[in-house]
Image 1 (cartoon, rainbow, N blue to C red):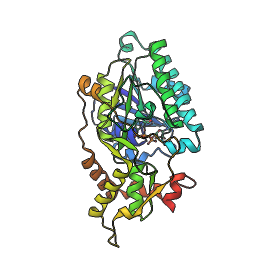
Image 2: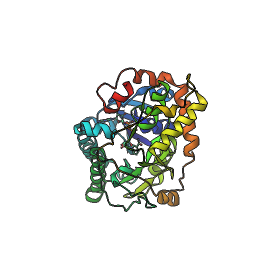
Image 3: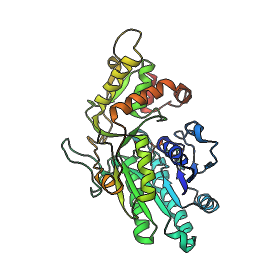
Image 4: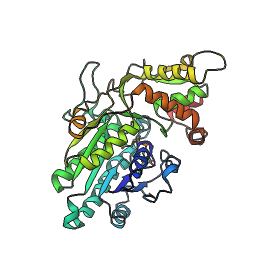
Length: 354
Ligand code: NAD
């Protein structure tokens, strides 16, 4: 496959690029604007691979994207570029509308124009794969219900609303113009190279620096966790075997309250890197005012991708979390430069610095 990955310098995009280039039959072109969340250091191990190329580009620049699609002879677009942090979407939604909605629209337009120019034998192989989130489905009660591919959309935050809008645009470009698309909606990812504003890396690194561990509300909100490498495998599988026009839910069947995730990290760190004063890291937990519009629970039913494409998560949450902590302990070269400067004025940043 000749694959254009958008947002490949981000957390999931970089895991996907690393996964895809391991197969020499794939050629990967990564386009990324390199916002605060994009980090080429996450791609250091593959940057010299002959089947990998990085181009700094904004998905809103449809002329440039169209040029890249043609020059690189792309047959698969896997679209991950987005603004992704819910707290930032509350503090400043503009960039979310611009990249997640307008950017996806421009990428669709460039892809449609390119797809229409393809020779007849290449038209059927082209895919536009849109990577989205479980958050578009909104709030689940604390019961046994799960999000399926048929769950109606009910986003609660500016982030999830912008992702929902982009999902609808992608679907419309298929229904109206025939663009061969596939959409995946995935639960919360965790793993290495995760930007330290998100819960798991924030808690690991705050703990190591003896800083407060912020937990929203009473910590009872539930998320379904999936290791990023399991997500990357699912995306590669859907790109090759997914049916045109279909949606696939991806999840880890690993529901945890936020508080239990934070406490588990504390307990693992107590064993791996005991504090000098002998206390548990749990004493750093600090409950903070709840996020406005905070959905209580997300949980994915991934039965369709398991049944139809044979995917299932390989990493259990407990083992994956322990491995992730080890990665952060061993890879300060990656996170130290980020922690040193870029949090001024952010809501959680104020807590990091507290
Ligand atoms: P991330 O914030 O780590 O990375 C996003 C990347 O997009 C960054 O490299 C950034 O520079 C790039 N980008 C932003 N605006 C751009 C633009 N206009 N043009 C080009 N590049 C731009 O995000 P992530 O956590 O890796 O998420 C990737 C995708 O997966 C997103 O679409 C997100 O909605 C979706 N997703 C994330 C999760 C999760 O738990 N992180 C779960 C499900 C779905």
